[in-house]
Length: 96
Image (cartoon, one colour):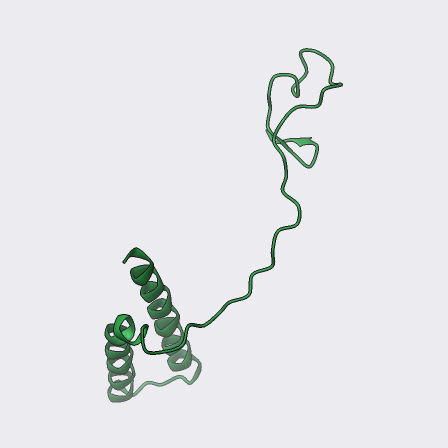
């Protein structure tokens, strides 16, 4: 249920941003055209949860992470140094 709401929210935001961008880039000043465009966006957003089961899902490719930064200390660090005190590390550099 939550995934359906999140999916609909993302799609409706993208749809509204696209419509607003097109209206802005085309410099539409006629109130009737703008009202019609936003009415279409509103009805489309209201139909998104129902159309989600009918339409095919859109797959967005994500690049897999090959390297994960580890958090820890170096064993050869001098006692009392920042690394010996458990300061988190990212790529061997203290994150302070």
